[in-house]
Every structure is written in structure tokens, then in C-alpha cells.
Image (cartoon, rainbow, N blue to C red; front, side, top):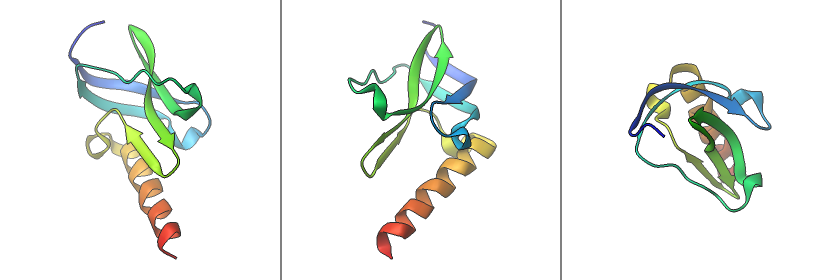
Length: 88
């Protein structure tokens, strides 16, 4: 695996196409979860690994949503809307 993983990569949604697109990465590690059902989306960077995870009310993201244009906007909008639902 080429490290650090810096630049644009395709994010492929597992369940929800809302989370597909290109995202900006800048990291030297990846998260290898035990429960693969938590993976919402993945990318390929020498290997396939999860980049968006959901565990209950926790949404974890491996890339920079604020730099990732439309997919980043979609994720931030999803997150804000899910918070609004919890408050109401």
C-alpha cells in the first residue's frame, strides 16, 4: 500500500448511493472493522477498505468531507439532518 494515501479516490457506497463519489484522502492508516455491516462505503487503494462507517448514532469518515465537494456536502447534510431528527 502506498502511504500516505493522499489525493482523490472514488468512494463506492455499499447500501446507499447517496454516499458515492470522489473524496479527498490524506492519511497513513485505515480502519479494519470486525463487523463489516458497519461499512457504508469503501474505496480501493491497493486494497479495498471501508471509509464510511455507521454504528448506532456514530458516523465515522476516513476522508475529509469538507474538501470532498458533492460527496462531502451529502455526508454533512445527512449528519445535520440526523441530528435534527434526534432533537425533535
